[in-house]
Image 1 (cartoon, protein in one colour):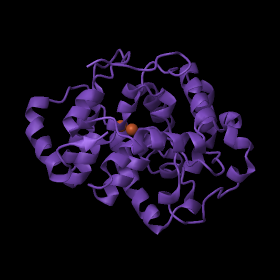
Image 2 (spheres, rainbow, N blue to C red):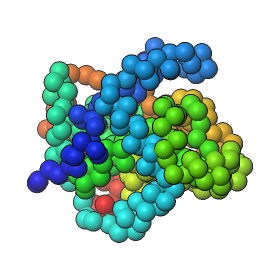
Image 3 (cartoon, helix red, strand yellow):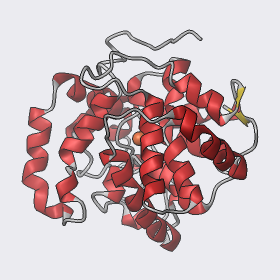
Length: 295
Ligand SMILES: [Fe+2]
Ligand SMILES: [Fe+2]
């Protein structure tokens, strides 16, 4: 299968998608898990100043272009019209054709990351749907293979159509977003109602929201929150946007928080043994998901 990425420097400042994830890990080191987010404001500014130019440019594009109109257009483009039918394995293999100039110190693929995440969740004795969530949570990155720019596939997500939290990394870059000058979208609630629930809120577009929509009929609510909001760092790490959430969102955010360390900190240099693991995951996938999904 041919690998296609929009590689013009305008759209692809990052050398690879992991560069964004590495930056998130620098901001939220494992040692800070469970600590008060307000305590590290000083450091936060440092992370912005010491970020690589490629990461800074990536966020500049993301914050500039993720408007409410853009998000709604992407919903129509990718969710109302599906491109192909694929099983989970076919989608995983498709994702694995995304070979960007990977980290030189690791030769782990996208699929390896997903298997390692799932295996760690499995080792810790979590429910089967939780393991499955680990396996599939990043498959939405196939958006890159459909030609989508990096800033519309990965990045910390945030609500659009209301004021931006200043806890979102690089908040100044929002000044170039057309929504920034629309007063309707710049009040605390914007187009939303207080505590109406995240389901009524449009999030910036990326691999999270995309995959959520593909699998939303098949997985438990906890799993769907993990998939849909795993990059919503302003909420699950900074405790922002509580006024948009309802009680269920607040309860479910705890599951997103439970998932996040597996996503960020599972890094082993040993390649998972596909042959040995395949039967377990075949069973797991067919327990929850249909043979083919529409992508
Ligand atoms: Fe992700
Ligand atoms: Fe991930």
